[in-house]
Amino acid sequence: MPKILRGLRGATTAAANTREAILEATEELIRVLQETNGFVPEDVESAIFTSSPDLTAEYPARAARRLGWDTVPLLGASEVAVPDGVPRCIRLLLHLYTTKPPGALKHIYLRDAARLRPDRTT
Image 1 (cartoon, helix red, strand yellow):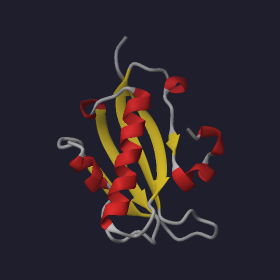
Image 2 (cartoon, rainbow, N blue to C red):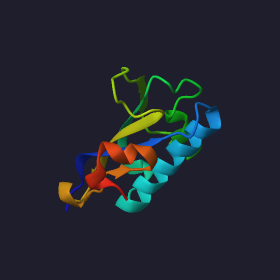
Image 3 (cartoon, rainbow, N blue to C red):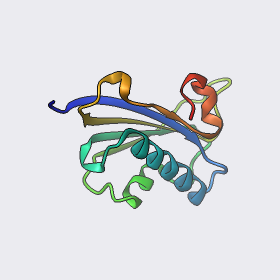
Image 4 (spheres, rainbow, N blue to C red):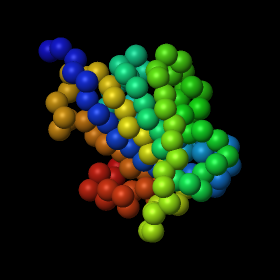
C-alpha cells in the first residue's frame, strides 16, 4: 500500500514557563506520538508547533531538533489569548506519510491539554 500524507495532532502542557519545562513536555508529546503511531522522523513532511501566549521561554519546536528531527521543516507560532484557554499549552500538527487509514492514527492529548479532547486522551 502506498504512503499517503495525513495529519496527526497532539497537545500537552508545560509545568512552567521555563526552557526545560517546555522542552520536556514537548519531547514527551513527540515520543508518545511516535511510539503510538509507529512513525520515524523521515515520515514527517512538516511539523507546526503552537504555544499559548504564556509560554515565552523557549520554542517548542527546538525539542524536535533535540530528538534528531534535523531534516523536518518546523514552524512555530504563538496562539491568541482566549477566555478559558489551556494555560502553558503546546500543540503540534504533523503532516506525515503513512500507510495507515485516518481512523488508525491516534491523536495524543497529554497532561492538562487532555481537557481539549477528553475523547482522545491516553
